[in-house]
Amino acid sequence: MDEPPKNSPLGTAGWIALVVLLGFLAAAVWYAVHAWLALSGVAMSGAGWLFLTLGAVVTVALGAGLMWLVFYSSRHRYDR
View (cartoon, helix red, strand yellow):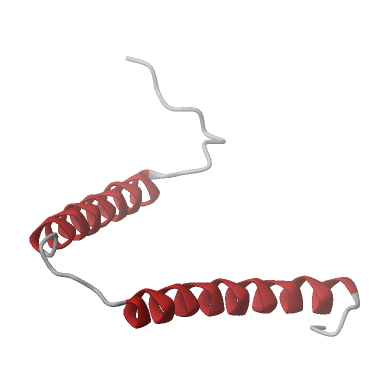
């Protein structure tokens, strides 16, 4: 029987956590597809599409701005 290498980055608990997280991801994808298909007959107005797009753009911009701040503070040693 082959033993796993001692310098493996994941131990038993890490692999269990990975499997559990992949299960959560699969459940979330299944639910998203199920909800999307259930709402396929619902119509959305132009204002709805506008605000949906605006919300997605603002969310991505906020995430990008926060990541920029993390890297900026790290490079300039503000976080020490």
